[in-house]
Length: 295
Length: 107
Image (cartoon, rainbow over all chains, first blue to last red; front, side):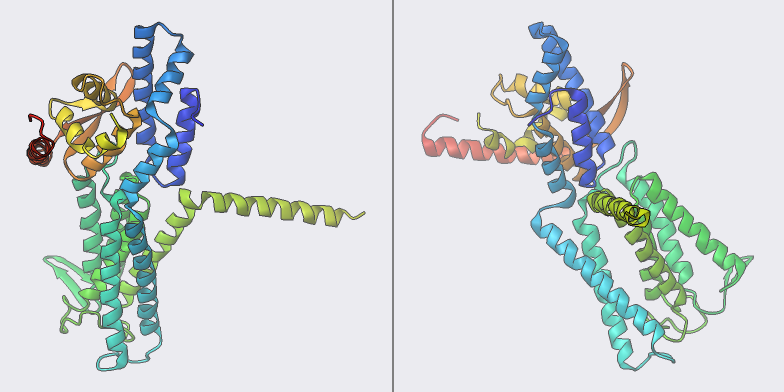
């Protein structure tokens, strides 16, 4: 059933779009402008009344469900895309879990042990999974209102990559001309925090909340991949686990997963589940209040 | 004309209309209707997924324009879009000529 008023149509469209995680503000404004122009033309051509013109314009536009379904296909891809992304998320989570265990369980360095194989395999699987997620997420590539994809991507990638590079220093000090930064010192952590904030700010400005978590995941992956590359010791990609040198990479990873989880939980797709949980809490509260009031 | 028949060629049609100048969703629909002499009378909302898809592919760029106190999203062709349009137009001409020859009608 197509709503008969433009206001009801736009409200339904916005609700449907939001529930599918689509940039509803842009779509809503474009459709609103379209319906206004179509209704104006109908009124001038057929001399029908405003509400009739609005109804005819909406009919010619088509149901909001069809539009949102098509937009979902574009932003998320087809069934295969979604399946690949789901598998990639599972692989990414499992690989991270292995890396976390490898960081905590061995009491000494992992070089030459079975842990080393597990770490390299997990890191490669994680990188492949993150790449698969990025490539199958058309939504990330969609330009946001008033901003070009290239510009916001650059603003996001540069601080994320720098964060990963700085996090790769697992030992000693960093000398950048007159600036000397001791790993683990105040300046070191201030730079980490500033870069994290810059990446998060770019993601927020682009209206892409999940990109905050992705920035930290990217930084964590770089940090572990470049581990030791800038130290006085030899570069040990994927190394330093268990001996504490991969600490910053692991922290960045954990932070990234934290942000990804929060943005997913706060996202529109979990809206119905949150609403159900809220209703369950309210009804449980009412039952408790009735029980405590007694007969 | 059947909607699914038009949908298969919507990207080419939209690129062709946008290639004529900076334009917005409603104007594209109107221009499609005008150029096809009313044959392309598809649900008007169909054009937006095509616009978003072409923009994601880098064939179009868009921006907001303030018109009479209302915000309007306007689209224009990129260099890549122009090349895509030329390629698709060539493909279509070849296809149309071949079909005409097969069914025995003049191209």
